[in-house]
Length: 277
Length: 266
Ligand SMILES: Nc1ncnc2c1ncn2[C@@H]1O[C@H](COP(=O)(O)OP(=O)(O)OP(=O)(O)O)[C@@H](O)[C@H]1O
Ligand SMILES: [Mg+2]
Image (tube, rainbow over all chains, first blue to last red; front, top):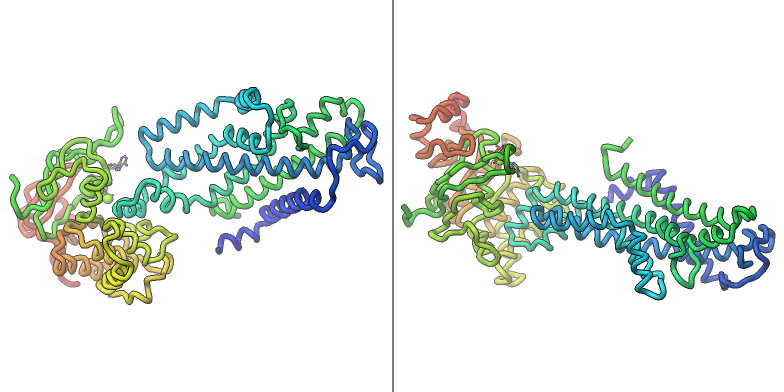
């Protein structure tokens, strides 16, 4: 409770949280209130921003502002989904590897390393080949599955440093199972750490979505910030001087990830007293 | 040699940490025997391997070699149910009363958790009654302390909760690894008294682990002197203090100049 109060005194955390909440609410409330189809072609190709279309139109003559809001929603959903998956896998593997040590640790560590060296794109391409459509859930899943290793690494180190503590020995002497010990004696001590890792995973999920969508491997049948960039790239908006087609999604991606990184640094300063100024 | 009044013994118990050039032989070929209902102390300087030996006896650490025999049964490699049954009979109190607590659990949970060892043998009411009795046994008022979190208790109070836990489980052998070394000096004898009470009221065998020969002499009937992983001397406390054999024991005694007086003053 005390740390939570401290957290809300950290300017970095507040700024990050504020921006994120604002973007999040915009992305989810606007489409619910204003019923506009982002795929509707309302004008000509690359109309400059005007009072009618404040961010102009894209290569298909669609309203960039409407696309941006819908794209933000898609990207946030994929990012959050990827963050949850990556955190769940990474935390589970990291906790077990760190607590058990020995052979279990060696095996889990090898798996982690294999995933670290396979580029996410390779797995995504493989999955694309086997699946006709890429839904938001599939995108989130794939991005999550490819980015859990570093969470696993970080959590493993923490888990390892906690397993020798005496309350863990007391739990063992109570006959508690490994799962019980991990959940009750280890995990609560690193919750703040897990949350920080989650925030970073969401940010990297959103960045990776953009990267992968720019390769043309984005989610099907929806607008995301990544697919917007991909279209802008494909239809030479840069050469046409149609900056409004790529600058807004790029800035939005930057804003979301910066807000998350800010939250993370704010939390880091509070949770790691050594860094507290 | 196995006699009826022996509770636990080890045969050539050894623990090596690491391997190759960096290997540390923390416990080296230790064969000891502990009698039922005795208070025995394992004494040695820091790093001599006391905690490692204690953790092996507690089955928290796998020995590299050797055997542990408890009441005639080889318990070196027991697992699962048998290990749980072993922990009903062999329990511990650790050095650091702060680290012994999960900071998220109130006192009553620390005690109720111990019932895992008894596989739902008791009803909720029985459990609660036993928790209260154990807290009373260490001079707490149950209603005052049961809902307290560890950060609300002092080190001495926490160690009393750990003794209450031992009281609840009523093990046959209690291994106390430096139970007073992190507690204010003026509270130490109180904690020791509570531990010794356990032997008097429940017949618990107690093994103290300590670097403090004075304290060991004060509380125990027999001593095991440990040095660099080996037990170099064992026997009656009085005899070891008055006629030490091993040079290391002599040095330990020399380091505690007013041995008997210091503790008799308390
Ligand atoms: N988990 C471990 N891994 C590697 N070495 C260890 C480990 N635990 C203990 N050791 C080493 O084994 C030796 C004996 O340590 P141990 O903790 O048993 O000594 P101790 O007599 O209890 O000391 P103290 O009085 O400081 O508690 C030391 O050299 C220590 O560094
Ligand atoms: Mg020790």
